[in-house]
Image (cartoon, rainbow, N blue to C red; front, side, top):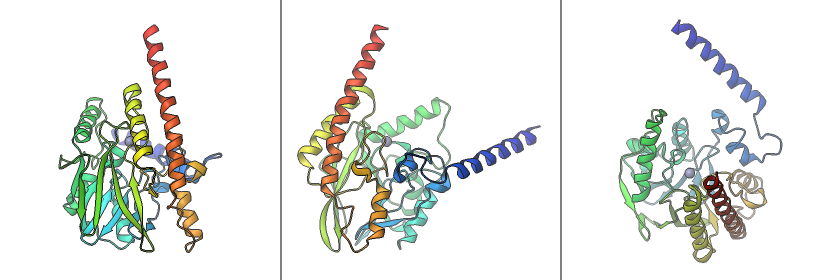
Length: 315
Ligand SMILES: [Zn+2]
């Protein structure tokens, strides 16, 4: 009996998997390429496994299509920003090898926030490399709570998705140094209670540029989270308007898409088509336009959340 049920289930999932691939092996109508990785192809595992690519002299994209994993080689080992989640962790490790590096040389895994799609692979990659895993105190605690909540709600993380054990605690103003590379830490909450962001110098044909990983690029958690997020955006507008290379944590953002349809994969393709032309990842105007969009979006998000809360009170 059990055997039959398992066989039927396996057949059904095989059929729906095949159907999914046949129907949607690419962007759905009206979708951009990057958008397809978050939307219509969000659960298409094979589609998500994209080839790694070089972005700057010292920056490679090694993640699946929907969530970024950035590899930064230094003179003393590798830094990884985020770790993706299962079933993509082996793909990330393979991608690191494909661009010529040994994952065992990863010294730091710098997490952008305590959400599963970013931290899921951290424990496995740490085990393989002995890397330090870094996050803010607030988000270490948030990550643990999130896991506890998942179990409480009967949806335990899949094997391999366990949150890493609390390791390196980082805070505003810290500098993480590895060989010739320095990474400055800022805390810009709103997406999670303690999302860190990272600043580092990136190079294109040996010329330095200001690179930035904004760890929590969309508001969550109602009026409170929205208000914190807006404050973070205002700080970015004041102190970080000069960012030249935005190392975004997703190829596409549902909340505030990158302007001019320039998601991560569109930029990749522009670069591949014209390898000797200007590097499309160096684009301060695009960053500033995105900040403007995010600012307006955050104001609207707060207003909508306030309206929702009021409606809830009068009901
Ligand atoms: Zn998130």
